[in-house]
Image (cartoon, rainbow, N blue to C red; front, side):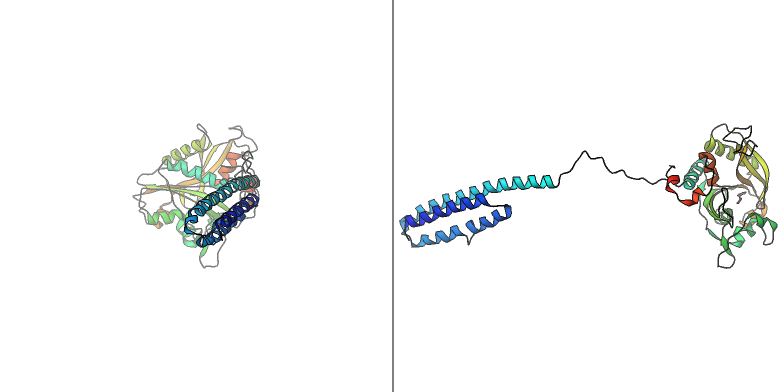
Length: 346
Ligand code: PHE
């Protein structure tokens, strides 16, 4: 091995390497080529192994040539790498192209069920008068649903509520939210101002105005010196907030075993405003709720002294309120879960 031969081998390696680098099909192949040429066990190292056989004075010359060869190969690899990466990026950008002008997919938002919407509105109005929302069980015992509300087992007033019983003896699905009155009085001290919204159940044949499952919102206020006039004033405020300022209202005598006196609370017909139409049965009035002064017997069952405390209670159907507000004519819509109906509310 002499100097000329070795530098010749180096030059051959350089031109071959340059051609290979320029022809590398992709970055991975180029990387493999770089290792093959310039790596620790690469071809350049292999050629330079011959350096040991040269006379000492020739060695620096070979070293100088080897450096330029290495630099040349490195430059060729860098150059090819750059153009490969550019092409690959272009290809990837083309592949993963995003059309930023495409309209977004609409997000379908849920909405409140109309029964819940009405209950939320009712609760918001009574909250302004200090009423807090309390919950009471859907499965009740006969005593709380009836007896403690002054409805004894064989009392004919039970006919007002056709009851669904459950397997547990003495228990039933509450027919109204009024048993919540008892539970509240037994657990809270006056002054009491609560709203009891919840699901109720009755053994009913379903039609446009009757369901076997519906909601009620019960209200109860108990304090010293509470009067029927307080009830009327509060319900007027409620009717004006719910149906519009200035709407006329009235009390009619009513009957419930757990209130005395009992009343029905009417608001002027929202459709005709008084003269009478089909919506109000030609009366000019719409009945909104039942109410009355809490019966002394009920206060006693609640653990309160009727000589000291008086209270009023009222109960309304949020579906009925919703039907009146939105002009809905069939109660069945509330339980059918037809999205075309449900999607129309807040
Ligand atoms: N619980 C009665 C009903 O179901 C409504 C009501 C509640 C009446 C409170 C008076 C007082 O019809």
